[in-house]
Image (cartoon, one colour):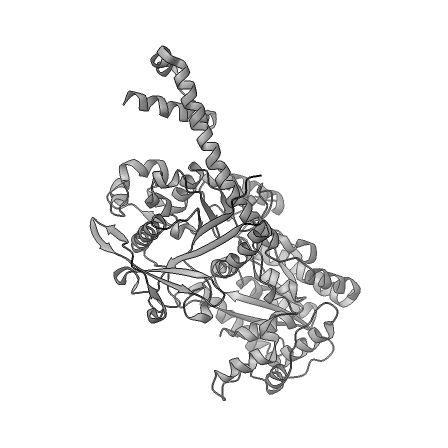
Length: 613
């Protein structure tokens, strides 16, 4: 069994989490994963007697306090538009031992803030991603890394700047967290010139890697380069064979999605959402699923925001007139004692439900209300506008049903603000049944999770899903759409299927049917509801299996490099065996194209061509 004694991983990502430190960012699930994954990988490697060292490589955003970072004495030359300049690199080691390398250039990154790290202008974005990738590649080549692990397309240009000589021996793997965003950039002066401006040889690379309907497509380029060099392309839910979850969805074509929607609906759909965004490369390359895990801190036994001392410290950082919780009883009781619990102490969860009801509606609960909750960003992906569509009919079905929603829209999202307005209107019309808050409050979100009965997740797409795990672990049963990673909780949730995104009323109807089924089970079959809640809390959401699969992927990378070396040896041996027939063989030998091509044949064709040079 091949097992290296030591592996040194460069983990490259735009977001790293760690926002409480002031030296990290988390816009979505990417940051949460990169924050937790390295430590879990180290533990998984140790179980295989492998010493694993990880350095996280990430941009240095302008709001970071650089006085807390250690500058590195390293040359990192970069060029854009044929104008060379130097990036700076800084190092920081966090209290848990994780080393992070930050890359900074004032001209490229000075505009960033804690809430703005992705350029909205595609041309600016391409220049930024290229410059940072050049700096990162320069750093990697000057350090003894044995593996590179890339996260999402923003860092997808790194392999091109590492160069083929480096990639010959250095395994590079690519994890896709959200394929909806692919780094599509309109061409300026043609494909060659567009790449030349990014310090990439356009004539050599454009047609082979980047060309996508008169755009540069960065995720396509990275996928092809990683696959070509023997690395693995993974995504964040599913299995290694891509038979379920997001790994399976990315393989589905537009035509297949429409056929599936027609069968589901019973009539032709108006419009369907295609997870691969029409990049058919996903249908052709093997995409493996390695499902994200979650820290044990998300379990109700350990949740920090359910512990009195943690809440007391958070309150000490706030003005006395600005309590964490607005209802005085909720505030005093949450800060007076711990409210952690497990499946054998569900009376604590019942007390949290009471305190949540007080916080949301200002009165003690009467006659066992059902608290239906929703958390998240008001963006198209999360589809939370659908919740507003079903509120009134749900209240009509069961007057004891109450909605508690904590969600907000970004400043420039008009559709999100329209959804906010809808929730505010419903809260005004039904003040005893609907609570809406668009101000983020971490302890409140944890109370909503732990005190709620049902969690609504009607996501348009959900590559992995974290809130479904978070809710399930605290006994807040999921009601949502069966998409991507959300299907991992299908055994303890109410999930509906719907693909026609143009038929909002149709989707609202099937969504409501699952809500009604959940409410009726709660009311009329409490034993079944209790069993479902307990099953949800028993989910194994740990990183153990996933981290082990990543370690195995790293080991596979070395083995594939070995296979590539064997291939070259086989090709060389065969060419030598031809003796005087080399020219004759080369004249006639022509490998098949596309699906009829054989990669070893093309290696042989390349080697024969080089003999003529």
